[in-house]
Amino acid sequence: MVCVDFTASNGDIRRPSSFCFLNSTVRYIDYQNMIKLVGNILEVYRYNCPQYPCYGFGGIPKYVDKRKVSHCFHLNGEIEPEVDGVERILDAYQLSFLNCEIYGHTNFESCMIKTVDCIKDRMNKKMYHILLILTNGDIHDMPKTRDIIVERSHYPLSIIIIGFGENSFHKMIELNGDYIILCNTKVEATIRDIVQFVKFNEFRHGNIQALAEEVLEEVLNKLYLN
Image (tube, rainbow, N blue to C red):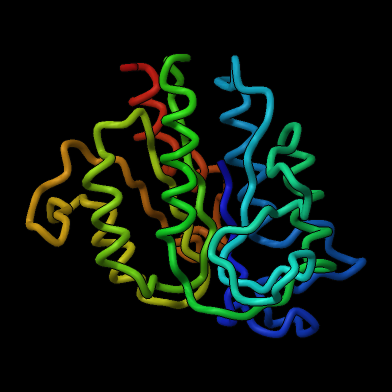
């Protein structure tokens, strides 16, 4: 499952400084490059799962009856959010700007609830699930996000968060749980670490392939163990 940031912090998509700036001279922006790198590695493990559910958050989709900010809308603008393969994810993202306006804050709760619902529907298939979130800002719904992660940490799920830009990402580092065990608002600890967070800028001018490998190292270990 893929969730992509459409919040106002991306900047005006018409300006080169925007995280979402698209033009004819650059085929893929950083968001798309990470989808391609991570997606192509995970394709090897995608048996019994022919399609990827893809969502956007923080934007205003233009294809719904009431135009308001949504924190979990279908990236492809269709009734069903699934697309076939990594290339179709990239196409859906590219076309999404025809149907969506950059707008709101960074909230993860809705996308994570959608992921949990998807896992519940597939529990009998004994599948392991990966949620890839691409974002450029720290989250505004930290308590709710912590609650969902802790309460669902027994699910067959890993969450990969890639942070873009110069943000400090203090809250993302907390979700990562490498230094302090993540707890919910009831001070209950997570059963296992299911979040992997990496700052894209630390690899921005280096080996992007190394970034993808670091992101996936912990996840792939869990795949082998399940």
